Length: 127
Length: 278
Image (cartoon, rainbow over all chains, first blue to last red; front, side, top):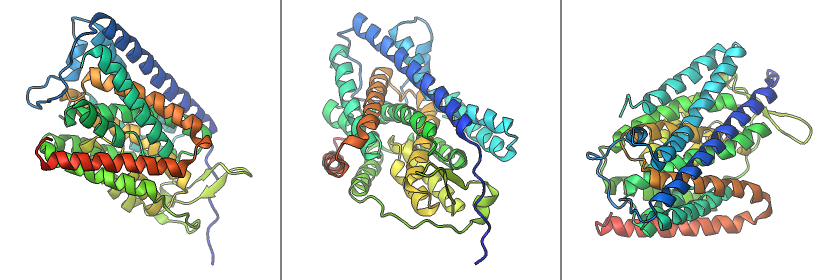
């Protein structure tokens, strides 16, 4: 049997370390923002009862509308949630830049496609 | 329930679910959604929205650790994400036109499948050294950490895995779970990645997939912040704690407990679907 040799492993230590730092910072920053918002929310409206038992798809307002004034604890909570939801997109963006630096055209294109799909969903272009 | 009681309750439930999900490797969604629906009477669609945010949180928390250790195959992850994110956006769009009992039925099927795979982890497989044409052209073959330095491995059946991932993405969006079960099957059985490479790469992708559908749900108002935020926070804490104690616990017993909880909630949800309560 004549088999080609296994390929040499790509250098990956540096890229992955930086990627891990980006992920960690975003995740824990959003956790901190969400915590602050929730504590503030309990402090000012401890007796409020959110309506969670029913959801009407047609009548619901976008979660992102809470980012508009008047600002309050829920604004902060939503900012934290949005940062969390954006973290995977940041991860893909970071990968794209790293592939770009390595002149890896195929994977630059693939990460760009993923990023476009994520952005379409997040900006509410498809919903 | 008032916010002062609800938020601590959500944090506790999600922390437990995240802990169990991280220890068994099956994600918290299959525990979080039934807990919210059965214990707290939350609407299924809102529970799905909250669970997806929790899936992102746990994926980000765990992925950072795995990427650092060098197990994740970033190229395989990016390639398969093209399929999972497309599937996820499609699934989220379809979900608006699917009735609640239908979504609940698909979810129950996912519950039973998760319980089954928790009890029967895939058998160890021999290393496949034959090169795959497409995988080689896509430069997917890589190495994983070993006792005596990096160990090389090869990747197979890329088109098959892409197809399964499209379905996994749609399923994830429709019922609000990470669908790690489906992903690991595709990477494990089809691409024949080493087990730890497939689980960590799957974890890496789960967050990106969930973010694609959560984006759609955010604009549909299906992510209720007073519900989703504490659930995400609790799940993150639980999964990080789970990853810390992973090596010190008896996993087989835990998998049985997990499967038992999942089956019981599946049966209760089935009863509710049958009686029209869901």
